[in-house]
Image (tube, rainbow, N blue to C red; front, side):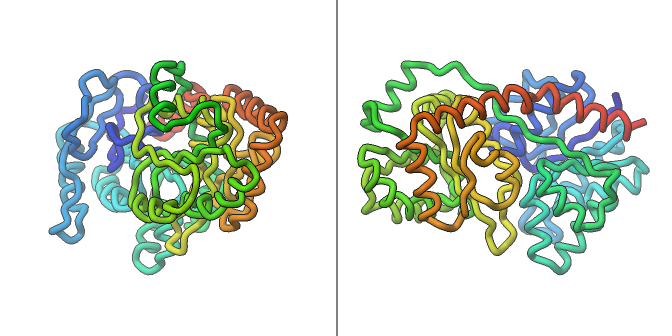
Length: 375
């Protein structure tokens, strides 16, 4: 196993998808083979992590380019320790520094991509697109989280032999704590009503505004249904405003792992009709769908990005036109009024997760990539 320096802007205690992806890969690699250079996080607890974690300020708003601190920290690590391989978690801006330093130290580098980190620069064009292409073309390997993301990477001129599909996996299903579940439902004043769950970071691409637009149609057909939106983000205030006149809509804010597990368990279905934004922001895969499936719940997804790979239409959930509130409403109403359909989709989703989306398999695949490149 080669000695690897991983550089990332997203890492624990961040709860986002990239941080989760990296954590699970790192925990499965041999202890002490990876050094992680990550941003400072006051509430981080790295003491029991199986790899070495170094926390430093990596970006500076008062410098141009703002990734110069990242460059110098990476250079210091490469100077002070012998590494066989650079592992870059974000193409830009981390890949810019990584590409330059990999050439100076004459070591290969690999890059993880997840969708919007490629689609964004491609949509912006100009120097952002040129930088992205240079970084990706210089990598010894580029991992992609879906065939959709692979298509974006191919547009940058990356040879097929350097592309590696590394599907993300959901967080392991938790045993639901009944006290937590009862307390949470009591706080939401829900007793035996069907729950439509929307969970994720409250950003525009997730399509929660489309779900709110669909809600009056859903409520007319299933008046007891409750919409619970779990998460936080820049769109929170806007979504709260849109929901002011809507019945049976509640926001939980950020929830912890036990509370999220309780919400999955209590829900009838999970809905996230994610769309592609004009700036290229897109859902590269959609791990939340697999998480809901792991609890035996059917899902409703949008038809953009990699969602149709995370959700098999009419098999593990329903895939609809992401921007059409009527289509979202029709799919949710089907799941609320056809319990046999909801149960079948949820169970098939659960079986698929258990069969095809286990971190042990991804770790084995990733380890093979590292070993072959680090030779």
